[in-house]
Image (cartoon, rainbow, N blue to C red; front, side, top):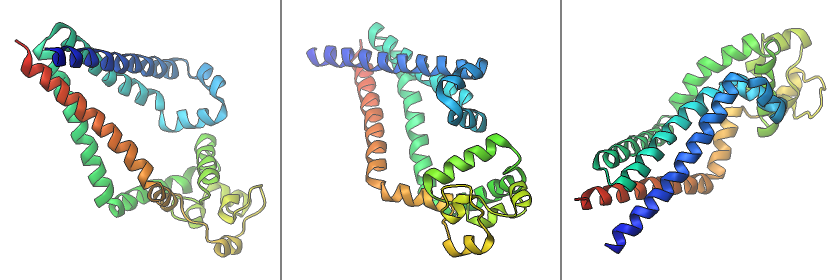
Length: 237
């Protein structure tokens, strides 16, 4: 009985944190979607490019709604000892866990396929918009500067782009330049700066222990929550 009461209390506290986190994410997502300019003034130009490029507001709303529902079901199910709510909590968490495992397997097994798919989508976008679309160009500049990379595959991604046609040169990161010095094709061939996709994969593999540890920690928390919810479900009258 003491074990049941302890797990019930921990279930309530754990899901209360999830509920509050979901509410915060939902509020920020709505704020970004409804009143983006005031949000961008607080977090600066880098957030401006990121928000407009990936439309992060809708992602935050979706993530916040899922966490809000999970937290509510977990708290309500444990507090009121409601079997239906606990089973719904377990089912949603199980679906999320399976989706995460499936995504990890796909990422490991089909990396080459993902690279080919992204190449077919991203490279044409670079050739069309880089140097013409401000936010798109800024996101790529920030990415290349932070990862010390050039384009998606290499400098050839920028050939025929508006930037290349106007400047007759490649972006400075393609020649390891930190300032706006001209980066000719000869210099780009000489430096052979790696593409951002391969650089990102390299960084992930270099920090595989950290990434794996974080993923394992999240998976362990999800498994623990599922086990506790099922324990409470099975021991309710």
